[in-house]
Image (cartoon, rainbow, N blue to C red):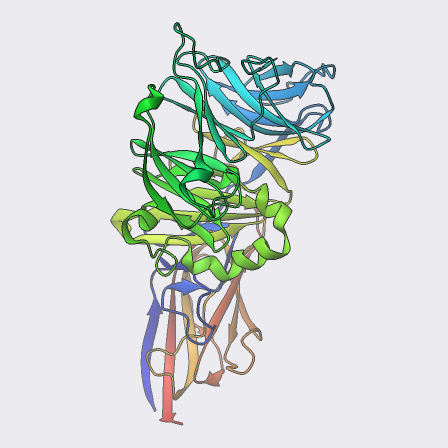
Length: 473
């Protein structure tokens, strides 16, 4: 019987559940919860979500970051005051003009200079728009409608069913196409470009163009302050299920949640076949059942790009899907966070991420110090590996771990039950100065399940197995 050492020295593939546990690619993981991949391909525990304060969830329907403040939106006559709590930034309260009916949800708030353009929904399902806290009206004095807004080239663009409506230049409340002082108002009926287009969901700037998205279609528009120069450049037959999953990412790309999972607009735009090798394909089997079984939670998914590290976060219900993307290290790795609450919205102020939940609590990622940890459960599980010999029986004599922090280690070697693991050791930091961890398992495949649930940081860098190989089956 021959001995050899088999090592896993990086986890740069992150979560990848496209294949079975017995055929998952090397460097990938079946579970990676409450952790991220760093630029070296090592696993790091996430920071803590520290509760800072609580505001009234019935009074304040939306919280958003802009410049150096958090902004909380309510509808008159609520007039609730926002508490200061221990927040390191001020909360600016916006009281929107009363609408003809009760407003039950704020759908979007888009900054324009020092003011906001806000879209909300009433109890009847009708939508309303405000600018500078005042209801916006059309030329005929009727109330303007919209579900999502985007500032672009001195104008405000908004989704309103099958119409892309836009204001005059320098005034988001100007909807008169005949204005000579603030020209440029008008609309585009996007449904005329393709019979299968549905109501618009959202939009995002894509290089020098605007990507307008329905659920099953994306239209790429070249938009100009002069509406006579607006031009449709491309139509793609995939769209988004959630307006606030759409976000600029990296150097010009746009990520969004579609019915098939997280997609990259750049990959679609170039290849027209992105679902096979797109940025989100490795977790499609996790996301598509959520989209199908929790359609409302998927519709109100929220995304943010974490400053500094530039990670993409996508929150659906109580799970945050996290993309660690580092070109220099060839790392495109997904993981998940369980923050312990349902994210209603993200807010970024400076280089800090805040999360607002459905109970009105506001959390700061990393706490006041920016580097705070808690005792959340970090879970890591590898596929069942073969050491390049899938039909050869093996006995794992021992293993070593390069880690920081306290970890519990279990090994599974039952190809017929890939969820069965046997605890073998609890370790504190790396084991290189200690005796190797003995284990008497035997089989063709082996997987490792590791957990950390101690206060403070934790890291997992490498796994080393001392394997004794037997005869081929």
